[in-house]
Structure formats: C-alpha cells, structure tokens
Length: 168
Image (cartoon, rainbow, N blue to C red; front, side, top):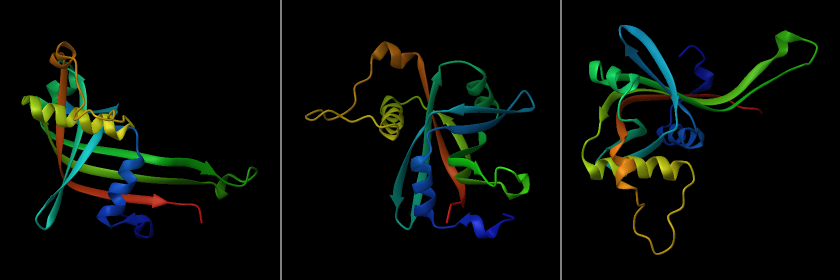
C-alpha cells in the first residue's frame, strides 16, 4: 500500500469498517475478461482458536453471469467503502481530497447447496442490512419457493486490508 499513513492494520477496525459498508463490489473473471458487479452482502466472523475466519455472503438468481464465472474460476476480489465524500476549497481544485473508509479482500467463492449453510448466509445478509428478528422467533423464515430460486454464495476470505482517510 503506497499510503501507509492511511492503512488500517487492526483486524477489528477492518471489520468495523466492513460493518458500515452497504454495497460490496465483487470482481471476477468472466470469459477471460474482468467482471465487476455491485451486490448487497452480509458477513460472519468466526473465532477459530488463534485466528478469526471471515466469510462474506451474497445472494443472486440461481443462474447468470456471476455463477458461471464462479464455476469457471472461484478466485475473487471484493471491495467495499463508506464515507466517500470529496471536499476542498471551492475555488482551487488542487486542495480537494476524498474522505473514505474502505476494505479490499481476496478469497474463494463457493456456491452453497446445504440448506442450513444457505440460511446462515441469508441471515447474515438480512442482519447486516438491519433486519430485526421479531421477539419470540428463533430464526428467520424464508419462503421455500423463493429460496429454491435463489443462489447463496460464500466467499471464504483469505486476505483483507483496510484503508481510510478521515476528517481531522
């Protein structure tokens, strides 16, 4: 990273930034060409002894360009940002800067087939976007017909970095 002063190294801070992002940009290779698509997403961090394992989830139609690309090559890159705001002296272009927080990650995408795993991924997406499980309800219910038409994908994150430029 060129701007080391803007690098976020602390894993908890990186996850905190991810928690504020609402759109994830997924980069794949499709038919030998780069392909990037914005998605809504959710994530789960699991503690596994000494390490933390991050899984990012998204859903889509049960067929299409994303799934074909993942089947051809499951290696993916993603980015997400929040606080993207440009500001500066209104009469001097060279004083402008952009304030932001962002993450970039790499991993392997897996199309989920197990119904419990698929529900876990959909739960992560719903909860990330503010869904509240009603009192007295143990788990989120999904319509079986809708679920049958929906693909759920988990990205097993191998590497994630963060970067920010915040107002002082």
